[in-house]
Length: 301
Image (cartoon, rainbow, N blue to C red; front, top):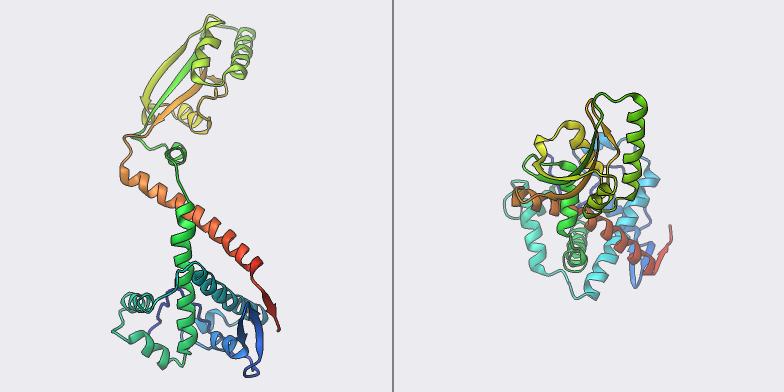
C-alpha cells in the first residue's frame, strides 16, 4: 500500500453523495456537466487523505469540485480557440511524467486508478484540461511578460549581495566640539538641502551653494557601516537620505548607482525567474477571471 502523488489532479477522499444519474448540473457554452461527472470527481480515494478531510464541509467541497469541472471546460475550449489543442502525444507525455515521478512502471498509473476504482475518464479529462491551461500560459500569457534589468536590480538592492558595489555622494558637516544649538542649526541646513536634491548631479550644485562638497565614493556594500548600509537599502536612487548623525559628523547620502556586475549570472537568472513566476501567477489569475466572465455558464444545482 502506498500513497501516490497525482500531478495536476484533484482527487478527494470523501464520502459520495447520492446523485441523480444523467442530471445536468451545469452548462458551459455548448458543453454540459452532469451529476455523474461531479460524482466521478468526488470518488473516494482509499488512502491517508481520508483522515485529513474527515471534517470538511461537503457543500463547500462540492462547489469547489464543480468549479474545477467548469474551469476544465473553459481551458479546453480556450486552447482550441487559440489552436493549442492537446494532442495524444501531450497526454502520453503527461502520463509518463506521473509514472516516472511516482516510480511506477509503464501503464502503472492507469492500473493504479483501476485498482482504486477511480474513474479513468474523469482523471484523464482533468489532465487534458491542465495541459490546455499550461499551453495557454506558456504560449500566450508568458510571452507578454518582460522582466527588465532594472527590476532585477531593484530586488538585488533589497538583498544587498556582499559582492555588489555602491556609488554614492556624501555631504558632511563636522560637529565635533559644537554645542547643541550649532548642531541643530546644521541639522536644519542639511534637511533644507535634502529637500532640494533630486539626483546625484544636483547634489553637487546644491552643496556648493552652501560651501559644502558632495564627495563621490564607490565601495563594496559589505564594507559599509551597518547603519549606512541599511540607509542605502531603503533610499531610492538619486534621493537624499535622512540626516545621519554620528559623534563627529552630520551627513546626507545620495545613492547614485548600485553595481551588481559582480553578482553571479545564475543568481540574477534565479531572481528573474522568481519575478516571472510572480507576474505569471497574477496574469494567469486575471486571464482566468476574464475567461469566466466571457463564458456562458449556467449552474443548475
